[in-house]
Image (tube, rainbow, N blue to C red; front, side, top):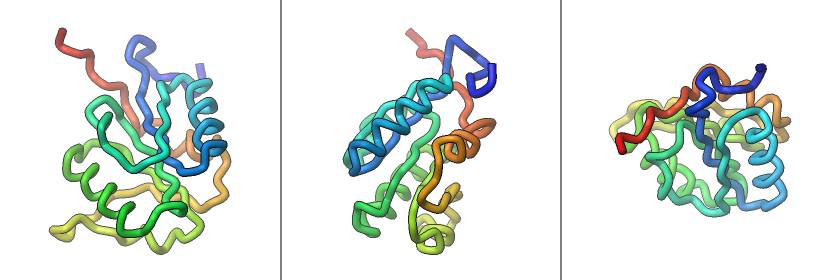
Length: 134
């Protein structure tokens, strides 16, 4: 089925980070409807980073320093993580690097971005997480 993970037992897990509750909930619901396990947060925190395959951040409502630190921390902790930013100021994030100069390897989408645009940026990049060794 289009939009669904190829492994139905282990869907892709996405963390949506946005200060605006409506943005957060609408995208979370859209991604969930497309077959992703989507969670939302209104703060830049990586507490669930080990359980997600992608993070979508709306950085415009946070300070640039906070967002860059968050993205660097996420990239350093999880090099395989898909990082998507949706911003009015695309150029501000296109060339961001890790502290040692490596690219952050962000997918940067211009705001406003429709849900299908964000979904397409995740599709094929965010693969299902492995089963927990329980």
